[in-house]
Amino acid sequence: MAREDDEELPRPRARLERLTLDLLGIEELRAYIEELQAEIARVEADIARKNSHRSAADAFFRKP
Image 1 (cartoon, rainbow, N blue to C red):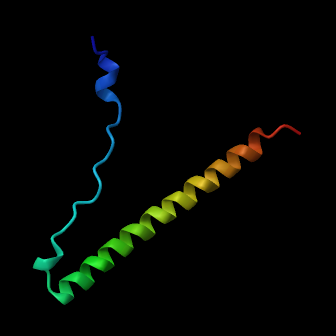
Image 2: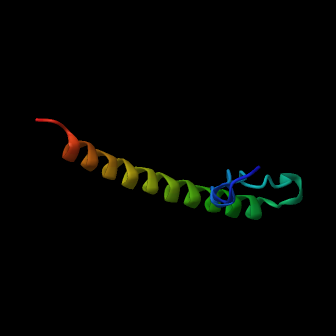
């Protein structure tokens, strides 16, 4: 029997949808690359932010 809490657990997110590149022109492909690079930059910034928080927590809880 499933618990009610199980329904609230985050589900794994699907990966980016793969486009059929054959249908896109050169300019559309360049625009797609720009979108992907922007998403990569956003994710890398979030990773850096989370690493900073982790470092601060580690420093706070480190035993003298």
